[in-house]
Image (cartoon, rainbow, N blue to C red):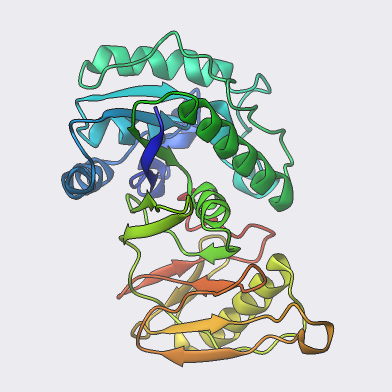
Length: 330
């Protein structure tokens, strides 16, 4: 089943982002379900997603075993698909995501898979492959996982997924439902371009295989950008991101937007875009930012594109080592 198209999606809005008391009373505070608004977001995304998928092909949905992703996989309404839960596409296990409650059990997400598979079966909306080996493409990572280890986990998982489906002759489409950091890791790997992009909840990207075997973006629901302006001599993702977020902190404190110490930054300015371009040559290693009205894309492996989206009041990440803590909406 050679893969013809891949969809990479982020889960919808989670309940604990609007009901702060939910995690206090829950026996599994690390595994928030979707909020009602999140279910509506996912349903709307599913309607658009179907326009890019061939219903005559076999279709598989590979989901993180966290409930917000499982509910998203179910809520997309892909009734011809079969859902498979994979530990390797689970949440980034950085300590910064679990400051208010304990992380999930250190069992390679087995307990999440078992509990949320039962939820899927009870839902009865989408066929479930309950015999699927949840560690087929890799493990969940360990608590305290670094940014680099998380990227490595997702890229290895994606490579194994592709090898699995490409070993069959019949074409198929694959939808991967995961988390914000995971979407970036997957897109960066499949497009062979390191990306640090603000991923909206319930957003998705559709990629199609070309005749020469590479992948091209057919559709991306992340369109609007909020620009900081900076200059840096560093090409590492963490240091560039820190400088971007430091700039946003300064702008917020000077009246450019309100700042909340745990939820992150809020930007009130209209969207535009910028690109940070890096040269692979040693004497041209400095970064430069340029603004434009259109989305810009890196042209080589050493380019690093930062994109932050939302027209209105957007929460940008805080600096507590986490690049993806958007008000708790991992």
